[in-house]
Amino acid sequence: MSTLVGIERGESLSQQVYDQLRQALIRGAFKPGEQITIRSLAKIMNVSPTPAREALNRLAIEGALEFGSNRSLWVPRMAADRVRELYAIRIPLEEMLVRSAFPHLTAKDIEALSDLLAARVKALDEHDYRSSLELNMAFSFIIFRKSTLPITLRIVENLWLLVGPTMNLFY
Image (cartoon, rainbow, N blue to C red; front, side):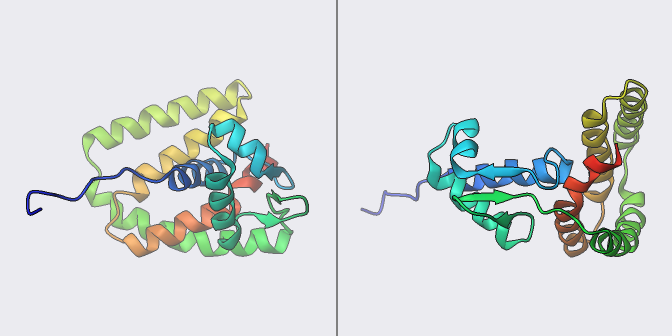
């Protein structure tokens, strides 16, 4: 028996669904008021309803989704005062992350940021707002993840999760 070792396991299906859905919400892939059902999510992600339900429930607990009827969840509609509050919180925290990250950005990071910025300008010129939103997120998080403030980073990620769907309204 002493030759047995623990089995390494990958992330659970629930975690994988959660991670993908969370990133999609942060990127603004869903609009405020959009319905997400367990069944439709399970079908899109090619999983059984259980991992989809678990992921959706986690996101509802985090405030990124709201429960509706018929086993469905909704992307919350945002009142103007809530959006203002979220941005008022985000601005100083994101500034902290940028200041912390700046000394740690490499030439490769700067090149990636430059490429993302050029791609975003092109996307905006072409009225490709979905790509523009995704490029904006990628640009911001390259910087944020270079910071030395992991707690602040997690808070900012959670704020982006809450405000991500409203990004669709800007365009």
